[in-house]
Amino acid sequence: MFYLTELGNRLKEAREAKGLSLEDLQELTKIQKRYLIGIEEGNYSMMPGKFYVRAFIKQYCEAVGLDSEEIFEQYKSEVPSVYSEELPEQLSRVQSRKTIPAGDSKVVEMLPKILVAVLVIGVAILIWVLVSSNMSKPDSDDKKNDKQNEVGYNKSDEFNKEEEKADKKQDVKKEDTSDKKDDADDAVDEKTDQELAVVSTSGKNSTYELKNTDTFKLKVTSKGSPWVGINNGEGKLLFQGTINKNESQEIDFTNEKEAVINVGRAYETEIFVNGEKLEYSISPTEMATQLVTIQFTKAE
Figure 1 (cartoon, rainbow, N blue to C red):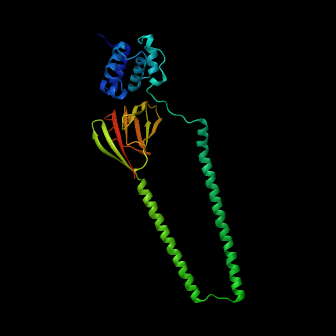
Figure 2 (cartoon, rainbow, N blue to C red):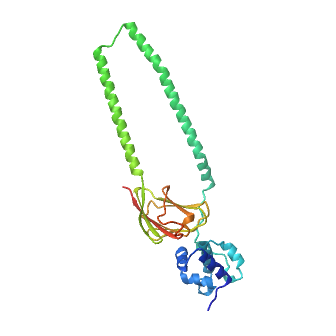
Figure 3 (cartoon, rainbow, N blue to C red):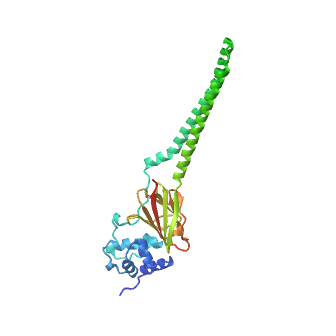
């Protein structure tokens, strides 16, 4: 018979304060319920291996919003020394946030300046061409008029009519080209207007459909410190862990058919699809733990 230890009591109180049952915590951490009960009771002998005690306690802390390092330090006497060894890197369930190499970062910083410089040079060249064209045109017209005056040459009415017809044909051709270009632009705009709509809602589960786009880039942003798990449609875990405040996790699902986002604190979590913010179909204040599924149909 095991009884709750001080560490177990601290973890259980934090879990209940979040309104989470053992079943909810099992779904968030993917740790079996019997191991969660063993952690709360201090029954470490039932764990599958010596490293899993510290790993499970750390994951429990992150799911209920506690600082795992602080908990280990405060209750180090309750955790057997055999379990206090350093964890292997591969046991950490929390994926570290990717950083941009210093070289790439400098290139990214310089890119806007380079683009502005190219734009300024392009505008300067365009102005120079227009000014040169306008300045040379009067001189050319004056020389042409002087030459006509010297030889006493006047265009015939028939020649003028032919010239007017040619001008009209050229104007019509320009209008046709402009109309075709406008139609093509409209077609591109229509093609790139993605549709993200709710398909179904049940309990804490909601399903959305993404279509009329050939890309699917998912971004999950934190406004606090929510726990988030992200899987593809085949159940493969792509990310799991706590996202710190004002940080985000981005995953490209363009080659996937479905994204499943498990959110521990929906009221502290924002989801973006190709830059478009997803509106929760279930109020985050009423349902903190939510499972959001996005089905992707790639545009032809």
